[in-house]
Image (cartoon, rainbow, N blue to C red; front, side, top):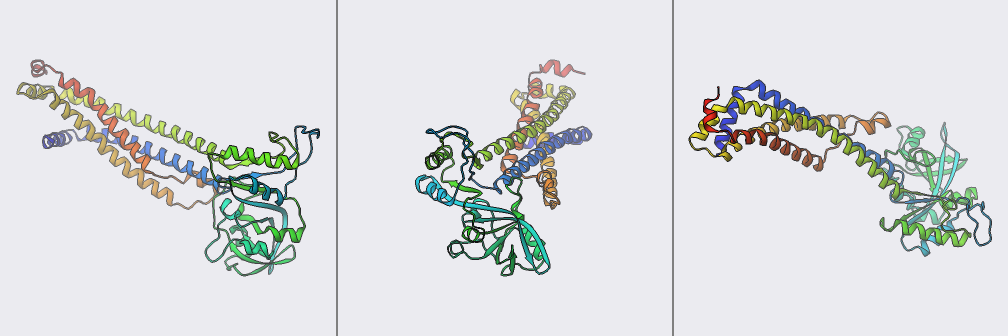
Length: 414
């Protein structure tokens, strides 16, 4: 039976080349629209999510604020300032905290090497800062470690952009630079990363030193903020509440007072970002799907024409004993074959387009959003399923009409 269906399909294609090619082109164009829109939507979703995570992955940035509620006889408007002792207290009494680091910050720190001089934002942190902020070192270098903190070593980790401004093509590892006139040894340079969320500027432009060294040089007692990572994303809200309770008891403020202890919740931000990305992708996908549906309507119309042209042929087949299911199988097979052949051509062209665009280096941050299409098995399965469904639906009604023809009327059809 399959051989017969293939033979008849090939014969029909040969007899009506232009009509078949135009029909396939409609399916091809619709497939290209679906695949490219879904691929660009997937790339945009990943870029938005990556841009956020590269500023902080699954963390809370906890800042000292100002009370907005009176508490235990104390007036509102009191300032809350955090120290490393607060971080240690949270780690001790909130069992869901997995990693923690203070962040001391200072703008306008001068970096000098040979005849190069520049200024930047400098942070004093703990080793866990690297993982929480995705500041990973390039090969040959390292981030600060526990020994650096314990011994107050004068070592510095540089963002990739500022390292290039200072050292150009020279290897910075092991070189000595002056930070506000104090000599430091460069121990690592950050791997390049895309970042669209940030505090105090992008990571590529900052210098990182041990928190203990920072305190020894500048004498700061209060941190800029604390970085805390919970063990469980599912218990994030409970962990935030426990942090407020622990620090509220120490600093004498209402644990429900959000202004006393502002937090940048990256877990919540990531969930919102994922939802926005999914919404964008669904919208783009629907636009492409409607384009493909229009192409499917075109296939159905063509199949109605085919049925009309081959009415006498159908009548002969029915007269000699062909069953309705054989007639339906013939026309559904043709509609499905046209859809799949056009879809295969569209998928091939779309994959080539995605690979070409994705290989173009991003010349500016905006290109990371635009020229970053990504294919996935999900996209492939969605497109394949849509093509199968459209092929079956566009062939079903014409096939049913052909199968329901009266043999006598079909043989007399002119």
